[in-house]
Amino acid sequence: MSESAPAETPLDELVESVADRSGEEPESIRTWLEPFTDDGRVTSAAIESSVTDVSQILATAETRVDLATRTHDEATAAADDAPDLEVVTVRRRAFGDRLDDLRAEVEALGDDLGAARSGLAEPVAVYRAAVALHEITTEAQDIVRVAHDLETELEAFEAWLRSANRRHGALVDEIDAAEESVAAVAETVASLRESDDPDPERRFEATLQTRVLELVVADLRAEAADLRAWADRDGVSFPGDVDARLDDLEAAVADHADALADGPDWDDRFDERLDTLDAELDAVEPPVAWARVDETVAAARSALSDDGAPADEPVSPGRK
Image (cartoon, rainbow, N blue to C red; front, side, top):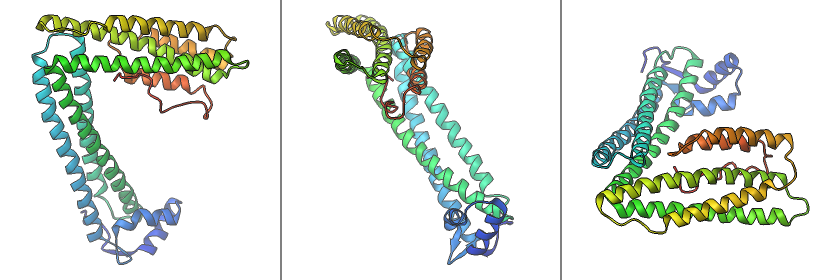
């Protein structure tokens, strides 16, 4: 801890000083400073103890990222034995990008911790350090969770690479998920067509979902083609009904899109959003970067009212 940190200062006195200089609410300041107190006084020892606790949490995050890195190395080695196909390359690149992001976040938190523990001569600086340490703790705990999830996904990826049955089973599961989504859209379309005054927000949401499902089907076709080529290379069987199911999905989505288009003209609020969505999705080709599509769809959904916008609803069933 910096030598400029206060030796002992009554909490009430420090809260009053920070409130006068920052204009923030005293009770909020008191809450943030609580970890720095011992028997009603802010002390260097209590600050140092808080810093030590946060350092340990950050070290745990670093360890989790290290473990994910090792698992990534093992999965990458398995990917080296796989054929040169987009279905492999896209997954491999996405995992590498996510791991790079985690490493950068851990490094940045280390810098933040160093900044928080220095220059504590002024009351406001002590208060800002308390807030920063809380934020570092929260972000480090998030990294622990995300790194653990990434490690689990990497293990699943390695198993997927090593087993044709797993690859084919995952594809079938994704098709199942797409079929369920199409069935849900079908119910909405039927309900809208039976209504004398169809809700434009429900119609817009169903139209948005059909746009995304068109992309899902195209992405599944590209993946199926790669997995079939992989199966042929290895001399293993490939599910025989995949193409027929994708054909049925494509036809059903097209029918729903036509039914939704056969309605009253959109008002400007929806029409502009759909035009923008169509332009952006038309530029997307398999293999699809679904995170970017999620952002595009979220922007389109912002046209809806708060009550009508299912913001947390996944837009790409079975896809990542």
